[in-house]
Image (cartoon, rainbow over all chains, first blue to last red; front, top):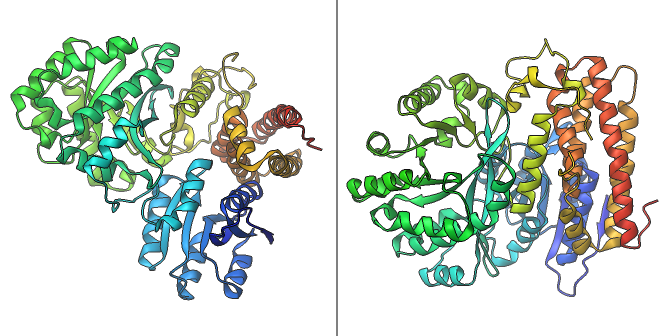
Length: 439
Length: 120
């Protein structure tokens, strides 16, 4: 057990750091102290319980894996003692689904979860989260759908360059290679922290700000992503475009103009159509999509399977890619009905000559099932969350390097490998593995 | 391999700018001690796959915090494969890990020297 005193005049209160990873707990404690907390750092559940029984804390960061014990036990302890005012930030190296479920458990216990962080820790996110109790715990990274944002604030954010993109890798399941990324919108504000797209997209849709926002994000995705395109052949960058924008017949030309300015070849862009239900006029949408395809730009139907018009849209509109919604992918391996939907989607994709992408891949088990079903590409926390450009570049080059040159210890046959083992993550191309040594 | 980043230097730079060089050195020292201890435990004639998996998991996460990409990803691969590797393969994997850790120590030392800090 170790204390670190705050390093600023103004105290934000007391912070309890519970983490069995020496490095991580030290980093969290030190960052906490820099921000203005008085910190107590403990490495185990037992010490955390005794600290909580003895003293009051304003905030607690909790790593879910605590050696033999797990963080859920501690959450129950906190609930039993009625410490519902303490803000809790949950950290885990497990996949996003574990974090989400933990959040639900904690909320069911009536605890104040201010956010969840995955490992490796992003220091900016950690700082944002630790500062958020002061901002009335309302607006941090994950699950904050309740922040009020005005159209004026969004418009100002667009002008001030607060909207940025992060890149989530897309992995080809047959080879394990990263073949593209999806650019995801992020809004970083000084007063609200990071605002979730679930909050600002509906407002932007309602007040007609989507064209402007889409242009901003497209430009940002292209200018940043060009580095990846230059480096890997046939690499694609996907950008989300709302179905509501497909009534604008000038959209293909506007997109082409951005590509020209940013010097990105048309075939490297995939326009992902979200909210196909918002397409007011299917004829106009068809016009727009056909011209995008003629310009060699890829088109994807996003969130396939949700919304009643998906199937109609799929049949009528010229998509080159079908993205199965994550809600059918999570836990698909244990759910026959979901598997049927995935298999049917793959069949539809084949029939209409589309690549099939599974979104929200979070576990090795789901991934193995998706490969068996014949999905072409996977995307999700199992591989990587969305990353800022520099980290995305590093991640992709590492990943592709590992795929190209397997380390010596995987080069030999692994006959005992169970079917669901993580090999699936790497595309199972064992026979191609060379004896190259890892640097 | 030439173009591949072994270290995401921005992560370490950010850590130094957030924590200051002294605190970063302290955390790095702790990491290196801890990692060396783990490797010593694994470095036996017949490593226990469960233990290898557990330690690789922990190395993966700490290395990620510092932006040690190669180490983190190698540890991640070891974590994924450990339970289905033969003792010989486990030994090789441990050896690979140790080699990368040595490179990482050299790099960490050079960064800290640049920031006027000694690592040991």
